[in-house]
Structures are given as structure tokens and as C-alpha cells.
Image (tube, rainbow, N blue to C red; front, side, top):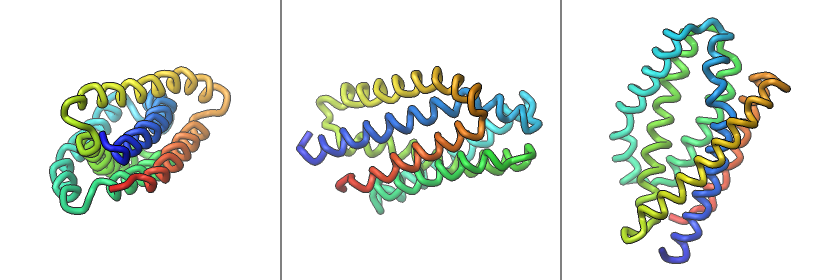
Amino acid sequence: MCDSQQRNYRIFIAVNSILGFAMGLFAPFWFLFIERVGGSIESFGFAIGLMTIASALASYAVGRLSDVHGRKRFLIVSGLLEALIIVCYTFITTTVQLYVLQIIYGLVSAMQMTMETAYLGDITKKVQRGADIGLYHAAIGLCAGVAAMLGGVGVGMFGYHIIFYVTAALIGGSTLVLFLLKE
């Protein structure tokens, strides 16, 4: 990797490790939160399905757009929207609102996941791409795992809403660091 690619790689790992930590706080307790707003195991499955289908349907189009307009703007927009969506969860009161939010989250997720993969391909060299991507995922996974353990304590002490707000703040704040990436 050249110096700017190495710099971008380090920034990208740092930002996404914080994102992984944030999602580790949030994700394990999301289902319990949904139960509190009247959701059932069936509505949970339906909500995940809606998000996954929306993400799948949007991925190709978002990928094509990023080939034309660059990855950085999509990474930033998806991170900021994800932070906003996490906050929106604290306001939902019905499963219909959950379903709408899940579809929106699926579209944003398509943007984030597609850009993450494409951007890693852009900034890593073919001869060591596997190792670089392996390190990237190891860092994120470790952060998410530690956060999941801490999240249970946080939910117990402060409740769901605070954890969601902390998650959104971590995602939004770390996303702003992406402005430092050089395209």
C-alpha cells in the first residue's frame, strides 16, 4: 500500500472498530427492546426480513452509483443516517413503525456494506488483501464482542434508550472522521 492508502486503511479500521463497538452495544439488546414496544418473535423475524430484502434490492444500485461518484460520500452519508436511525428506534411505539424503520435501515445498510467492501478493495493491494481484510474484521469483531459484554451492564444500569443514544453518538462521531479519507 502507498502512504495515502495505508493512512486511509488505518483511519477506516479505527472508524469501523468504533462502529463495531457501537453496534456491539446495541445489537444484542435490540430484540428485547422490540419486545417492550409490543413486538413478538414473529414481528422480529418479519422486521429482519424486511431489512434484509431492502438491503439486497438496493445494493447493486448503490454500488454502481459509488463507481461513478466515489465511495467516501456514501460512507459518510450511510454512517450519519445509521446514527439517526438508531435514535429513531427510541421513538417507535408500533410494529408498523418498526417495519418502516427497518426498510429504511435496510437501504442504509446496503449503502454501508457495499461501500465497506468496495472501499477495502480500493485501498488494499491484491497481494495482501486477504490479510488486510482479515485484520480489519478481527479489529471490528473484538470491539463488537467487548461492547456486547459491556452493553448488558449498560442496559441494566441505564436502560435501553441511553444505550441507543450512546450507540448513535459513537456512530455519528466516528463517521465524521471519514472526512479525513483521501480519495
